[in-house]
Image (cartoon, rainbow, N blue to C red):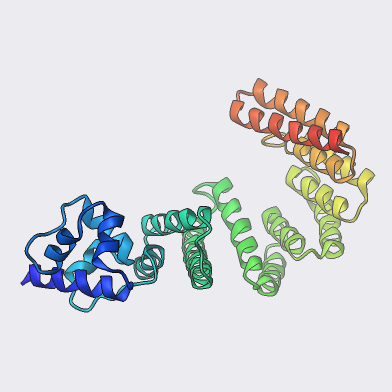
Length: 309
């Protein structure tokens, strides 16, 4: 019974693709008689040939064993349908790799382009839901479990919600939380970040000024204050806040990153380059070699911009 299903599908998929037995034979480096024997259930393709036959017909190997399977335009589109069903990251990667081969060979049809976009879209939505799920689980553990992870989860969850058009809800909720917990510096930070995500720098600056009156020794506030002032092109004020953050002591020399970014934004590439070098030395002296290498690479990119100016 299984052999009959296989042979029927071998012929059905070949005909659906508009291929002759000779064309299939040429593609798989066998003779036409061999293909005919597969379709008559006299013999079966070997284990190495079966996957290649499936790709040629735009199906998976499993499809050969199903009575109701249909052929797709190509193998990439079939893999896209598999990923849509399973949402398995491995299926996504396999699908994208197949599309990448087609892109390299300039073989994408309009339908392929749509399928590729849809596959990325499905992955995007799935990743969004999973990210929110695990941010919520982190937050549910509470600030006492791991304060750094908790704060990063709160911040990044808010940013993700902004990316998906829910920024207004984030700001409204965060304003309410700040009113309920006016002495919690983290809630003020989350509110400032929300206004930054919203690109409402004037309101972010207003909240920042109120916050540093309450919490003058919190370096994160001054980092954000500098970022806000950079966006408002208040550069001198931005650098003064980053200097203050440095005096208070940042976790990973954050003030140097900010200064380097700002110098580059201002077009002062040499100062940006020198700042990256200082940052790299500080990181290396603290045994953060990977981060130091990255800072040096960023410095080289800025140096290249300076030379191309």
